[in-house]
Amino acid sequence: MRQVSVNIQHWLDQNGCPDERVRRNALWIARMIEYGGPLEPGFMRQTLIECTMRPKRRRCPGLLWVLKREDNIIEAWCGTCDQQRVYVSGWQDTEWADGLMEPVHASELDPMTPIN
Image (cartoon, rainbow, N blue to C red; front, side, top):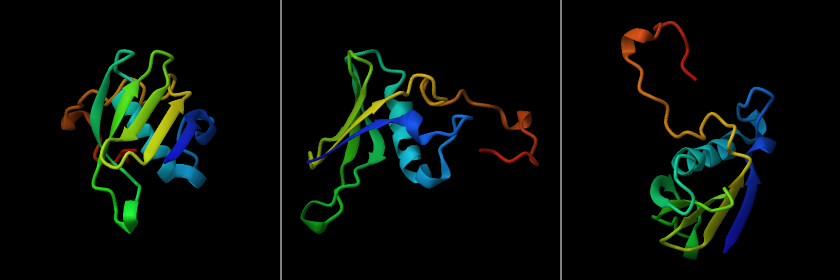
């Protein structure tokens, strides 16, 4: 089993954005924060985050589950292959901590402004 412990703050720049060197991995962790951050401690949910493991050299078809532990660590694991477990700390002050952003009506956006 692969276990990874990540303090997301180590992967963010001074503006709270994913550092370019680890952007793909940081955004993978950010999705765990979006799903797990709004949960009450002790609660969990299945996500749409794909498992990255390859048991028997085949991509695992599983989706990760997230749990907000009583110690405020977000724990993610694959319930299909049980080969991946991720522990996320330092997430509380990120832009993803409260979950998905509130919807914005299209008329409120300037079409020339890039959306990040």
